[in-house]
Length: 197
Image (cartoon, helix red, strand yellow):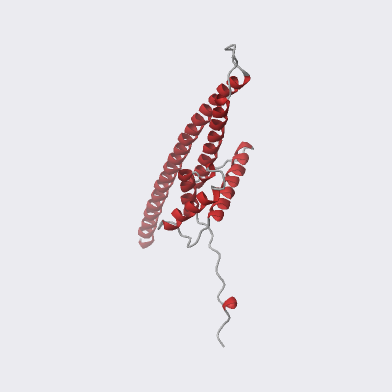
């Protein structure tokens, strides 16, 4: 009797690897699927999934647009939690995946600020030429957007500096380890010579 199809070998779940997450975040930053409204959002996420599946570096065999959207949301939530932990005084080092998630959050915040500024500019100004609350708000929003961009650039510089520091520390550790091995080898040679006497 042949095995029933429903009892065939169960499909194994394929988890996202670190590299898969990085590729997903890079593609989301490039395609910006969250910007499209009017029922086209899931279509854009499907296109993100198609692009990732066509990449040889992406290890998953299947990926739906909804899965890509949910994974991105999860990564952004993890990034938010890590940021809150840093604010509480916990020392956290950022991986490439977390840096990309932070960049995505900053980009989304910047886009929101820009949309608000454009909406404010479309409103009619006061006829007497005096600045209205709306124009003041537009100026404030513009200043905040500029601040966010500068803050993001500063964070990128900080990440690069931290990465350079980690590399320098690792190199220093390797030099110390190599010197310790050389010293141990010399000690063994001296002890061997003394033992032969």
